[in-house]
Structures are given as structure tokens and as C-alpha cells.
Length: 592
Image 1 (tube, one colour):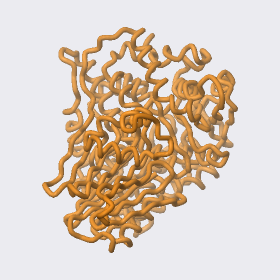
Image 2 (cartoon, rainbow, N blue to C red):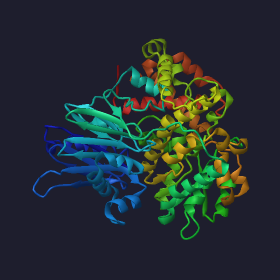
Image 3 (cartoon, rainbow, N blue to C red):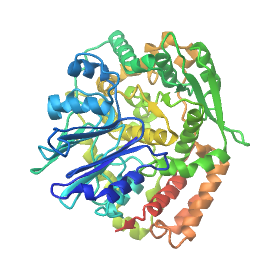
Image 4 (cartoon, rainbow, N blue to C red):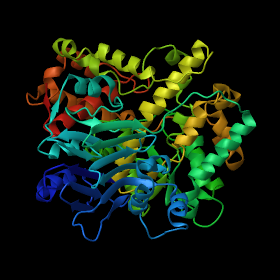
């Protein structure tokens, strides 16, 4: 669920338990704690939660471990690693112990052999070297800060604020990350002053000679040499491999939205015999009629569950529940997120956990790797030279003139965008539209997907469940990144390749159903009114951190404007500003 630590070349960290304990407590985010803290002369590690773990190895004649390792997350190729390291399965060993043996066998080269979702820290006491490693798609986060000739790290940037050497300060760039780009941040940017992020697929080595950063995997341009039949077989094989563990140790639940991605994940995870996971569909309940195409398609989800012989529960969630969950959802995340969706997801996952399921499979990630998001094929979005995802409205437009002159949000956004597209690997001879499609796919996989996956994992941790996203597989993503648009969207339908690959497993109405958005609390009038009242309170509170940055007249105009939540982003903008203000208050952030 979470890790933190501190290494220092000269200070005896056995005397620093209060600081380590404070960082550990800061990681909990309201979750029931089950933590392990280990202190030695030069390294202090802490691990919380049921996944991952801590392991060390020491020479009998030395008081401190020669190696210490902590992991947040889980490995998915344990069988392969066990065979390579031990010559056979080691069912009683944890992931941390396997990784420790892997480091002893291969050193930093273990990054090329392990697979899964993880944030890993390894302290090599003999080499006086700390390694920080993050999984290829960035499902788990990892932040660090250089403090007093040492280094502190944690899976939550805000947990580092519990260390006396990390100050709660956000400068202009940090504010731009929150208000201009947020909630999708620039990879590597920690928002807080002096805090940096380990990027997805990155290995950091901190040693007496300095800090080295290396990407061990990245998307590459490769001329496609496949036809539709080959692509379908590759997708089927990849899904079988990424869901194999759930057929051996079945997940307790699957999320069904009525769409093809969740149905395909359920079909592969359920297998063909033995235990069947429970199927859950989240829906909104409201005294007002909701738009017909809003949120989950309950009827289709039910027919999918019946077809797969799964016990199906439709969980209807109302405003009272969501308003009661909003605070917990806010605290579950390291940075402000997408409040309306986050509250629904946390409320649903909590209900699943209460029913006894702690392992949940979802189809999230499919739209990113198969290109199903509207922004990846919408002509207007493709013609717009900017980050493609819709975001949370336009909070930077509500800043006052002084703040805008200080932050220059338009300049910052443009700089970050141009910086991002410099890394796009293009195919030689591609036309303008092809280059644009590739750029949008690249930005989605390298920026939006880490945000999506890390946000899901933090909400799941708070709910007490492990959320599995079999479509969010780096090998499948790399393959589909070089698959032509015409193949990914067979028959001209978004996610057409996925639909064709699973057509024999699902009812036809599920296979070819048009996608629908996840149900958001922003659709509920009571939720919108509550968030509007909270933003008014920010304007009237002289101690509110955002108050001095906002243009009061613009905000009042926004709050009084008639808004259709399906056609504009007013509700999302209001909710996001409320959460940014709460984040600044909760962590006692000073603005510079």
C-alpha cells in the first residue's frame, strides 16, 4: 500500500525514529495501519499494507543489513522469477524476498527481468547506494527529496512533509502543475519545492558519486508488420497472460459498466471453471431524472453477468453517500483529483470490501492502450495543438490578474506541451494526421495513464482492496502503440480490435455497444450545490489559501451561470478548486 524511507551517509538513523514514524503515519491517509519499520545506521525503511513488503539480508558478523529492500505493489511474473532464481516455485516467499534475491543475482539489472506494478527501494549498504524503481506504466508513485546530504523517499509526496528537512512550500511552477495542468501532472514534477518524482519506467541510483537517472523502458516507433488476424491473436494471448493469476487465485469481484472493456476483463478473469467472482455495477440514484446515456448501462451489465454466470449486484449510490465519502476520497489522494468520479469509486469499492472481496478486476486502461478515448479519434481534438484529455475544466481562467501575471499559465502550459511532444517517436514518412495521432497516443500513455492508475490504486488502498487492471500492461501498450489506427479501430469503431478479439466470449450487445462515461457525482444536483456552497465559502474565508489567487467576479459569474453538466465543465472546475484549497490547507502549504 505504501513505503517510505531515509538514507544518510553519516547520520545514525537509529536515533531518528520520530521522523521515520511521522512519515509513516503521514502515509496512512485514513487507512487502518499495518506497518513495518526497520532502522539501521545508514538506512531507515517503512512499509504499510498487505501488498509488497520488506526484506533484508545480512552477514552474521555485521550488525546492519548488507541489503534492505521495500516494495509497494506486487510482481506479476513470480513463477518465472522463482524458476530463474530457485529452480522452482517458492510459494511461501513474499515479493520483497524474491526481489532481494534478484538484486543479489543481477544487481540493478533486475529492472529488465521483473514485471508488475510497483515502487521499489533497495539500500545496498556495502556500496552505499540507494536504488529507487517505478513500474513501466507508473501505476505506483514514488517521490524523493535530497535533504542534508541524505535522501528521503515515499510513495506519497505529501508524506515527505513529515520530515523536518522538507518544507511545505509550493512555488509558481508547483501552482501551475495544480491549476494549469492538474490533475494530470508533468512526469517527474513533485509539486512541492525540493520534491521530485521517480518517473514511470525509471531507475534512480543515489551513491556517493552523485545521482544517476535511467529509463529502463520507453515507447519506440516500429514499422507495423501485422494484419488483423495477427493483431487479434496477439491481443487474446496478452489478455490471457495478464489475467492468468486471477484464474489461479480468482479475484473476489469484477466491475461491470456495460462496456466492452469491463466485460472482457470479467470474461478472462472468470475463467471457465471453479470459483466465479461477484460482478458489481455502480449507478447513481437521484430524485431528478439522469440523462439516459450517463454512467453505467445497468441492463447490459446484467446480461453480461448472466452470460458469464456471475452473481450481479447493482450498487446505487446517492448524494448523501457521496457527500459523506467526499472527504475520505480527497484524503485518499496525494494530490487533488477528479472529485465527482473519485467519490463514486471509493464509495463503491468500500461496499465491495464490506461484502468480503479484497481483490477486484476492472477494465480501466483499455481505452488508453487501444485508443478508445474520444480525444484519440475526435477530429476537433486532433486538430487542437494541446494536451488532449478534457481535465477538470478551466481553473486557471478564474485566477486574478496579479496571479496570472505571476504564473503565466498559458506560457507554462505551452512550454510543458512542447517539451512533452519532443519525446514522441515518429515513424519515417508518416503524414501529418498520422503524426498527430501518434503524439496523442504517446501523451496519453506517458502522462494520463500514470495519473489514472496511481489515482485508482490510492483510492483502492483506502477502500482496503487491491484493484487489478489487466489492460494496463506495458507490453500490450507497446504493441498497440505501433498498431495502425485502422487495425485498432476495426470497422471504424473505437476499440474495434478489442471488440473483435473478445466477440466469441460476450453477448453481441456488449461487444459492439458504444462506450459510456463512468458515473460522476457531478451529475447530481445536490453534489453540485454542495460544491458551489463550498467554493463560496472559500471566497468569504480570509484564511483560505486560494482566496487571494482567485478573481472574485469571475468565480461568482461561474457559480451563477446556468450549467449543463454534460455540455460544459463548470461542476468539475468548482469541485477541483474546492479540493485544491482543501489540499493547501490540510498540508499547511505556503505559496511563493
